[in-house]
Image (cartoon, rainbow, N blue to C red; front, side):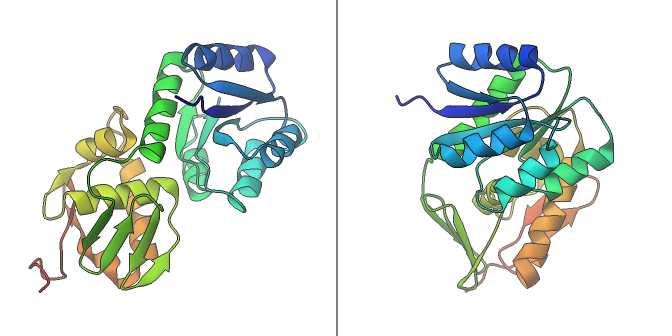
Length: 232
């Protein structure tokens, strides 16, 4: 199996070594950068990077700016690392298109597990490649979504969330179940993550965003039509 390449960006050499050692042990190739500018140089010079692990606080250019620069050209998955636990930081990360947000200190094993989960969903698809529901069409292989025939631009996590809803159309899904299935690990019951992504997803879907119904006190459900009846 081809070894996937991870870009690890952190100004602390000990942290980079720790992450690198665990990734190499799990059959990944690793390239490293100690600041934001070097990270961008590496990213744009190497077209084979499958995922970026990115620290927030760095010299020359912080992680937020690096993320903005990458997102202007690429949808490569990004995991943001931070020593801060401010809710606004986490929300800012998701607004910029970050796929995961991990607070320091963290378990390297958990980081590797989250990287593997993202790459597994990115590079391996099971079942039908084309899904459709209520005017929504999803091409898993092309990672593209159309609403009533018009293509819409979704982040990696928004795409995975919508795919999960369509796969489970008509079924009430708890926030915990969504977190465990879409994020592929226990997110310690942090429902804000789900609510933030659903809000953004609904907005991008336009009128079809109304198909995602809120189940108060539980979670969400995707209906096939506005009134809950299958479209003919």
